Amino acid sequence: MNQNFDNYRQELKSIVQSKYVGNERITTSIDALRFYHISNPTQMIATVYEPSICIIVQGAKAVGLGDELHGYDPDSYLLASVHMPAHVRVSKASPEHPYIGLTISFTMEQIFNVLKDLGTVSKSQRSPKRGLYFGDMQLRLLEPITRLVRLLDSPEDIPIMTPLILKEILYVLMRDEGGDFIRQFIMDGSAAQRVAQAITKIKENFKEPLNVKELARSVSLSESSLYHNFKKITAISPLQFQKQLRLHEARLKLISQDIEASQVAFEVGYESPSQFSREYARMFGLPPKADAQQYSTLS
Image (cartoon, rainbow, N blue to C red; front, side, top):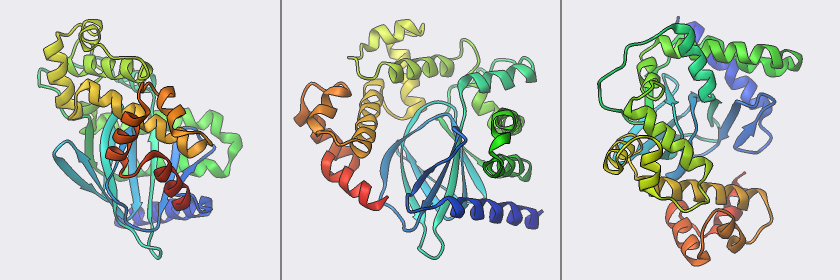
């Protein structure tokens, strides 16, 4: 079995390296699939995970969620069922042995369809867990992930085969311990599912002023219950979550467009460019323009 693990990892490593042309983050012709190739350890930076599975082929990473710090490497995987704020850093990488990883994102509809095919599941009465799950990598999971990545070499197969392999990957996850983790965010009426609804509403309207009382009412929770369960799952409050979404959107705009920081501030919902710059620097370690320039240099 160890040899099979090594063979799949070597194949994944070879494919990612073949796509590497200098950018640390590599988009692919499969919309749900992204690669990462990073040559040196990084500082801890803020990020927002989308519903996805993240695996490491080579190297290691540390992920901070609230006061908790988790390390993971090629023997484990990270699973996010909702959009989740976190702090991450690549902890093991070098020019000779770069960090190599990949992310496969899922839609809530894809997750729900697999759950539906698995049949009804009794509701869990346990309180919601954190919104990130770390599981042990299994050969039966690594194998379909490798087949998905192989599709990049046969573009004509991507439209038909991608949905099938994504469903297989989700099925394997659902049959493993990660299945209970995913279900808590899908089960109708559960506190986690209502928090997931709140997260979706904030994400879809992150530029608009947030009224937490109205948000709680819209997901059928009291304001105190929403706050308590939201913080239990994400480690931050709804208002802090909205702020992180705004700042991440701002960073993407600054990196990808030739645009003034003050204009970006207004576009993501800030009324004060100076407040935007302060909060941006607090989150990413540098003022907006300096951070975007450094990011472009590193990429």
